[in-house]
Image (cartoon, rainbow, N blue to C red; front, side, top):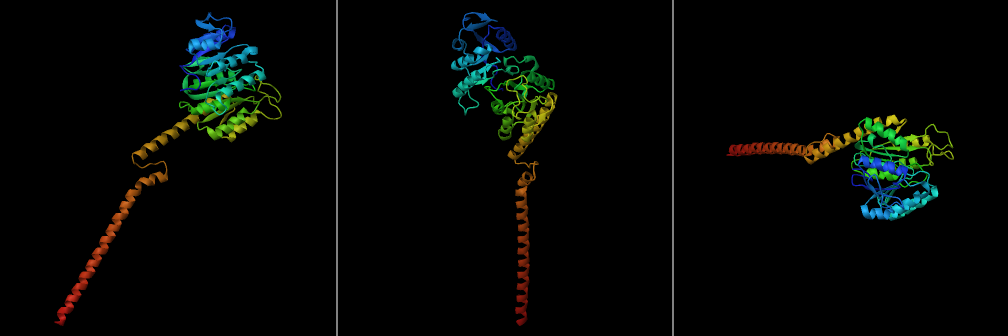
Length: 372
């Protein structure tokens, strides 16, 4: 299983005739993603890498039955591209474009949220980004710019604000044999369509995701909110990492949202929030595979013990997991022993009474004989 994309994803590329759109469309096709169409106004009827191009998203969806879109449209027009994809009824919209004005993003965010419903975190449509690397489900599909060769299928869900940091950590997980269900880059802008809590909710609901790697960075309070959410709602093990631990206050570190302001949003505060929620925090990225492997082993051991306990209980056999569980099956034997003891005691009392009665009868008989 996976989140958001899989082998059934049918993708259109908005901006496919541009430099970035064309290049990454080719990369996604080579990975095995079903890229069924592209959109560039005025270029309808042409082809790029064998993919038909349409003038509008609505035309592309009607002709191809697409269920996802990835946006490589220049920043001044990217928000309009999100609106168009939402109006066309696409369930998943991934905006790679960076540099969108916050006000433009805010309008697109509220448009998508209103269509999905504020109280429907697993619903559709879903916006990922803007200013993000997209996502990949290893061996099935990739939507965006993540390099497919560093990913392998497995039990670990990955969510990150940073693009290149995601690549680094995923490569290290793969080198240690820790494959991924889905790797999701949510972007680091102040307003994004899918945040940490959304991603955690999706991974928690995914049956094949056994553990989660969360990579945040300085600025804002998304990591603190995620820590509280994990503490209250996430049952799967999580390992966290916070980038920017040596960043000076007041400096942007790559993303528009990565700025420490008013003494808040520091790496130390975020790391403390995760640790208070019981989430192990890696000090450097290379520590992540070891931490996640340890937590996975613990989880699987607990599941194995739990399954053994249930199997033993269903067969009526003693369970060694705890004292109470071990005593319960012995109750019938104890009751039988008490019944046997009571029976023996009753038999002894009966015999004693019979002997006493016989002796009394004998004495009475002897007395009568003497009187005669």
